[in-house]
Length: 288
Image 1 (tube, rainbow, N blue to C red):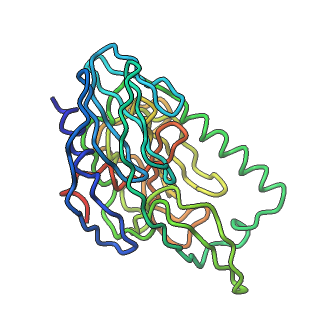
Image 2 (cartoon, rainbow, N blue to C red):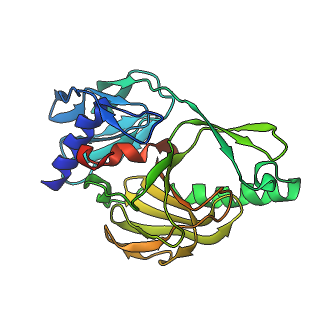
């Protein structure tokens, strides 16, 4: 079944170590699953991983205080946070399944050229940002039965990785002062303005706005079971809320809207409110 391909791809990627350069090197992985009462999970993963498991249909699965949806075929998914400790424990029918979590290094990225007012916004703009981000967060609360997440993802756009998930960020202002920010929530891919952006997996459009203050043209696609992708700084959005999109479909275009120093696509992924690394959902042969 296609979902098993995705599940074992997630296991194999447990040894893929992110580096601060655009080239990804893959170390040997231990794909041995945890198998008990029909449950299969990877033995170990990296911080920021999206973990796909299988179990008996109808099983009761819990993770991080949340009851986890299980598909009729027994597929479920959980997200491992950027700073998650080891082990991560998935509970299936009251049986604990520990997963070793490999720690990662998080280099500091110094970013210049963004509009200063987007780094240190005045109070009225800060209030607008809070409202807008609350709307985006609300779209991530869905728990649809669709399993689009269980198929191999594709790159939404071709280009150089210009920003890594999880790296600590500091914005350098025109006067030379630096403003540390929260860790980077996704992966930046540098590309020409207007380059078509394609859906990396199928799903449902749950949020679309052309001019959010920080993220500019902003689009969310829900892949089911709490898994979603967000695409930021778009110059154009070609779909609307409620649309069903298929993998490879053009959904918008690369831009430099919002807080951006140049044209690029920010691709972020979430499992509900847990941010995960988009690079780790791509098959090993698709990384570079």
